[in-house]
Image 1 (spheres, helix red, strand yellow):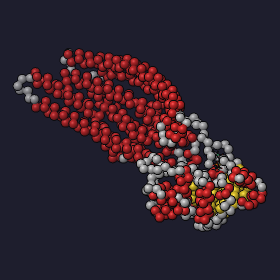
Image 2 (cartoon, helix red, strand yellow):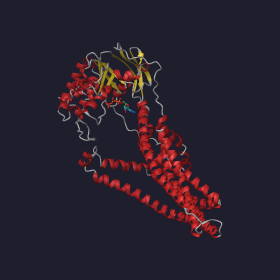
Image 3 (cartoon, rainbow, N blue to C red):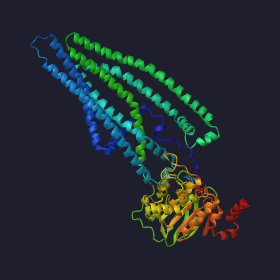
Image 4 (tube, helix red, strand yellow):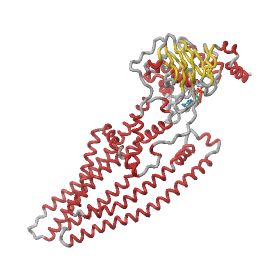
Length: 616
Ligand SMILES: Nc1ncnc2c1ncn2[C@@H]1O[C@H](COP(=O)(O)OP(=O)(O)OP(=O)(O)O)[C@@H](O)[C@H]1O
């Protein structure tokens, strides 16, 4: 299979620099987000909301009780022996009780945030995997779709932070409501002063939020390069070449250039932010002290008690601090809310391949085989036909080899046979009925295929083989049998842990295999189920010539009564097939047996001679 990396289209969503208004609009994603959180665990969500509401009343209650205590102390200090201190101690006990409750609430809230966050990340990851599995293969090849999936996937863990931040934001707003109500009751003018103290600071913070965001946005592609260099410079997959080509100096100096530029830009902004931030903080403090002076004067003139003074000054201070907390959190909450859009967009993508309402069962046994009728296919992201005007029959029981130069369309043909894609033009018939009429799951069960770019699962040997028929995951005799058939058994028997041997270097005690060894293991997957059509798309390219020959001899033997398609660039293998189909730029060039095609002296004969000459 050959596919080029597409030049990235303009990436949607988050990467465009958004205005402040647009960022506010992103908050509209939050209700849907909270619905998802609710679905994750209604019990935890409700408890969390209740605890947070209770907690948001605490600052006001504590301040008010402190006021009552101060007033009571003043009264007692002035009063004679007839004044009882009982009430004072009741109040102190009440404050003590509230302080304990408030601590317990905080603990409960952070515990629930953390648990709910974990559950949410798991729930979302599962939803993403389920949704991705339901989509079509060609959707994964659309770069915009892929970006969405990538971001949705990366963001699941980040969203747990959003959860606690968004909840804290709501909680702080309620706290502010309570405190503001307290202030309003005593002196409405103080609210005006408060607004004066915080609004300029808010506007300043928003402006800097925007500047930070724009800076980060402008650096997106450099940042990706930085991540890429970091990966190249320190990863198991690249270590070999980095050493041999002595790339580390080159990579480090490139990294330094970009990273230093980031640092300088960020530093400039940080310094400006710190300067303006202090100016507006001063303004805020001036507002606070103006209010404080008013309260002090009113107290001196006897309009307010000492307790009122403490209460009002405390409320004012706390209101300002809470508001600043909201400001600081604001940018990360909106940023998080914008990423949510990617997640929701991803969930809204629907599969395009239509399932029939009344699917037919796969014929058992297949009688006629597959007929391609003028089949044409082009990939979603390409204007070029990968296959066009293709008509031929794959008879039941036949062994057909596909031959053609790189990019001729061999893998595409296989993908059409397995219904990873549907033809754009023409149709494929199975026993006279359009392949689309059959149950897609049945097609996938009855057709066994091993692609050239098969996955190397970083799992045990037995799991690596069982993926060919994962329902038989625990059926060791079947797995061992498959390994014997693909000629992988002798290799596995030499491993320390045999079938339980972990493969790949990612996990503890995993061992790395050679390309050919991996292929033998992957080939065993083909023998895990009783498929009627078996397809090997060049999964033997890393085997040496003798091993490939043996594998195909065995394959021909084991598929005696089955239909088989094989793709190989080695003609010694290809000639074992009953018929050979030569593809040229997506079209059928020749079809026939090895002898017939040689006699025709066409494309096949030319390619065959070319390879034979190489061995002379
Ligand atoms: N996912 C894809 N998206 C877009 N174009 C693709 C994709 N996969 C393949 N193509 C294009 O379709 C054409 C046929 O590719 P295909 O992989 O079927 O060739 P092939 O004969 O299997 O090649 P090879 O021998 O190199 O494996 C090529 O021009 C290729 O660039």
